Length: 168
Image (tube, rainbow, N blue to C red):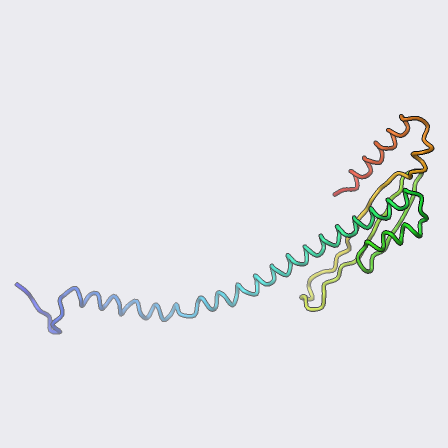
């Protein structure tokens, strides 16, 4: 026996239609959530990308300072004047860098320091950072005047210890 409903539809069609009608209002309520979530997430992703770019710029600047300090230490250890060594370091250094050259006995230390400020369009809360690079060397005239190989070995050991203690 078949029973028919007043609408003429089979019994399961009526329940399927009721379920579909119930899900439609919920779908209307969910509409726009993806847009709202994207509106919140996108600025956060842009901020993270800007911060990563800032850190990358600081690390790059620090490596440039180390290279410049090495150039200055190498020049000074070969016997060039402090002014010529400072010029060699400044040539390799980023713009606005300061170079400090010191000599204690036979050991030469060159430090290159630069202040990195956020560029124009970055958000105001990003702080500026000071990065520096340091290099050590032994004066070549001291090595040439050293008394015997034992003294030279001691100097090399001390210089290598200085370099290792200076690295982060």
